[in-house]
Image (cartoon, rainbow, N blue to C red; front, top):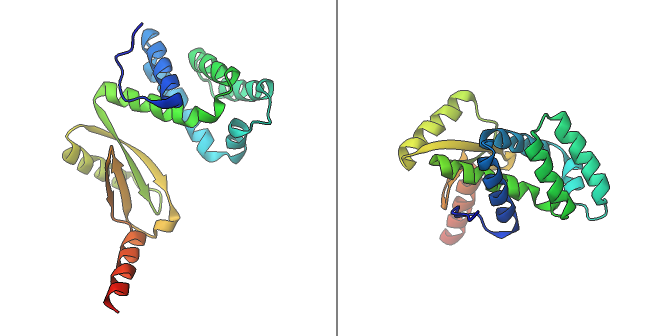
Length: 186
């Protein structure tokens, strides 16, 4: 099977591409995407889980037992459990966040969607979320999904990244620019 998928590079990209092709063959693209999104959310929320996947001290067997128990509890598909099992056996679990991101990017590319990373000082309300999606859809010209993150150091405003384009309207950046401008005056 030769791959005609482009854009996935590096270690995480190769694994993401392999999983994408398997999921496509098995007609489980959406199920695997849901599983990976769930695992990604768990990684974002748990320092202990991040330590588990990054630690070279923890043995393969211990990582395998912990991850398989977690995946079973989260009702992940057999394909996802097997894939992560292979990743652990190959000692590549540290790259799992990149693999998740790569897989979701490949799926979005297949669907003709763009993914925007939106960083805000506070969690977005449903109204704000919809308004941002509508604005981005007009600007980009395709369906847009949002990967929302919170960074309280921004103070206010947003940072929006779509592909290689970035718009930074955060209060933190504006204050920093003002400080630089004031240094130039005196």
